[in-house]
Amino acid sequence: MTNYVLIVGTRDDESSTRAKSMKTRFGSCSSGGSCLGVYFTRSNDIPKAAPLRFWSYDFVWAFLMTQKEFNIDRLVELYRRIVLGGSVGGRYGCWHCTLVIRQAANYYREEYLYAEAIRLLYRAISNIGELFRVRKNQGYSRWGAINELGRAILFNAIPIAEELAGKRIFYGLDKATVKSHTLREIFYVMNVKDADKLIKTTDPTDRRVPLARLRDLTTHAHQLESAIRQLRHYLRSQNHKDQKAVDMVIEILSRITHGNLAL
Image (cartoon, rainbow, N blue to C red; front, side):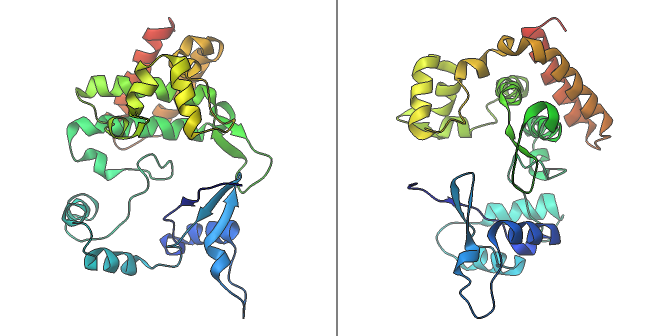
């Protein structure tokens, strides 16, 4: 029995595709019956709730504008400057969403373009399913989570991006903690055995990858050369309109290459 519920902010009103996927995952209201069940589902043994499922776009902004618990001025300004050039609107995906073509917020300041580079790398890894993702036997998609190789490449790419950016752009690594240790300490500094013990206290499932296999890319040497080559080819073939961000991804991949193999 689980003692947690994953809360998601997805809404039917986002798009026709989203409405269809929500119906598939959460079901639909039956006539004359209760609609309470359509806010809840279970995926891979993880219970999920979508309390905003039937909220309209206008209702989301009406709620944000009227609540008094926190100041949303910076959020409003962000949407005005970046998304619509003067009108509050649009929507962002999660920072790492592979379905968002251009994550506009990452272009606001130069150093955060390296965050966009990591997102593009994440998107490329997600899209090359046959190489970087676990195949599923059920569900609406045949591809599941990113596999060990894909995770290891991303794991090593993040500190390289921060080094090139000249600052810690992934500040969440310094904010989130487990038993007084930041995620940055656990992932990149701590002894791997001690780190794995800490990680296991928050994720006791079998989905975890031993930290040693994430830190040390030479453990994937038999696949790494081909993987890096395919990622470069994929990124260059997409004709991404923000070529500077793509060039940053290629630079990060080159650093990974030179640090691990003579490719």
